[in-house]
Length: 311
Length: 292
Image (tube, rainbow over all chains, first blue to last red; front, side, top):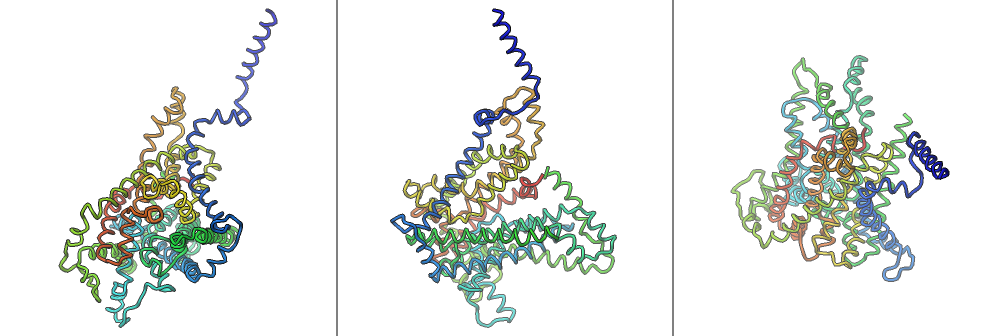
């Protein structure tokens, strides 16, 4: 009896001690899972979806690209085969050309329009609304609209003719620099709003003091722009540039509707190859596209970001 | 947090750049010319689409196209706006877009809430890894997805296309939602918990109503992304059509007036929605999750 009492007393003491102790999370996976059961239940659908519908397919594609069709023996033949196809070479260079043309134009025009919209003037709201319109327009429509500008009887030729620059219409929709330019143009029209939004947000977060101080120090407008605005805007520029470049590498809708197979890009090459029944070579091309994107992002981060950190 | 930053920055920003003109305002003249030119260039493609959809095939393919609308005709619209042509694709597009939006929210909202309550370092990491999936080219996912869905009999079905569209919509929805949940002060949840509400009840009664605007924006973005999609539709739909797919096939066949008409049909709901959405598509929506 006494023993029992002593025992229960010691338990009571123990619980008191535990209560008085500051809260310390218990270790052990089981405890952690029980404590966060609700959170785990809330995250797991998204997690499982990303796992099964993104990571597994990507792995599958990589696997397909390294095996023979039918048998599953390891091979590099799929890669060897596509790099020798002329359509693949075209697609590769077209994609790079479109990205370079498109992203350059987007950053230049995007910066200009963002500066325009960061000033106060009557009609600023209206201009902002107008500039944002293409953001909602379906990508395929952006491509379709460009058909009437770049066609043989399209408006670009008509304007050039009316201005007396050309006599004979130019054929724009052909593989090569012209085709790249045309597709990049449609892409610029469609994507400019996103770039403007990101850069405008960056501009608006630069405190006015910076310019006041620079003004007192006697900096001219151009100096302010070069030495204050651009460095302070760098994070926004990086974000816009990486986002846009990734999307430009993956360009599909616009190229499909504007040129179909005539001007292949990487994504449309993969689709047409898959559609022709060559899942394995299509996968190889898709893996090469993924590598292009990864190489670009890493190169940008190492070259540009690091250098600006050093400065 | 980010909202307050954006709001605080807005009234100051114009003063930073506005320069009071003392001489003849050459700057202002150039400024207005540029502003009007920008507006004109942005709207020109949409104008041309409407113009072509209102012209005959002969007018649209004439060697020297006119800049203004002459003798508009509703022929294309009368011919194409009938249920046999457009009914099936329209139904598919509407069902798939709505289903995608609802499921994207059901999957992303709970996860986004948990991510928004993580310590800052982990939240940043989670958001980055969700965004990292954007680096995958869609074709690398669509190719095996298409072959899997064929063996599961999901091709040409709305369910299959919804599952595929979620791949594109979910990361963006998660990003937007993390930003909007992060801006809900935690004090509210804590006081709700002090009052004795359970975690689930707090979520439904406190977090959900306050996060509703963000949820609406995310849902609309998901809806638009699905409505606009060509890539997954072209992989998965072989006999059936969605509206973008129909537009693509017409473009491939080269009938310019039909393409323009379908493009306008495709664009009208989208432009209306975006115009309504604009007050929310601000800096906060796009950078909220990563900042503060």
